[in-house]
Length: 213
Image (cartoon, rainbow, N blue to C red; front, side, top):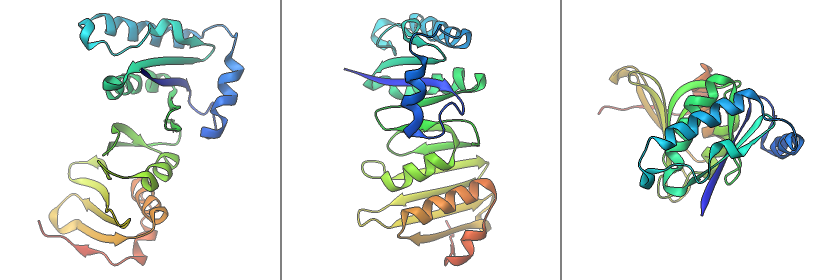
């Protein structure tokens, strides 16, 4: 059984709900040159690893359709393939669509950050849509999310079994490390996005405590 990821141009779909309309419109269209380039590079890299370490469920070159590329991978290689797609496709102006989770990872209007999602691995950017989707869905076995934009500059949250969130941010040094508790996932998502975009206005309504570690 394989796991599917799909590439489509950034901003080609305004939201996850409109991805299928875009993909349907690609049917029978000639494969775009950029799609061909990405597919050939994926197949090349897959051919360079031992068969037991293959990260493609089928040749990527077979998955092109218009401006979209459908790629399958074994479950144990999802993170590796997704990382390659970010490496190869995002600089070429492409987004990554995960149809199993309905996650649209579009670099358009994103904020660069080293993101660790406790249940799904690493990502190179944040978007408002991803944060709004991820935070309410956080749960075991990895109910946390960390976004780092510099040395000791990060925000992170952990969701407890009762549903409340610990939220911390650190702005470069120990005397700028604060924490609070929030019960509403919508507020957590807004605060993380505000932090990432430099808008701290929402922080003023919460009781932050400085941490000493």
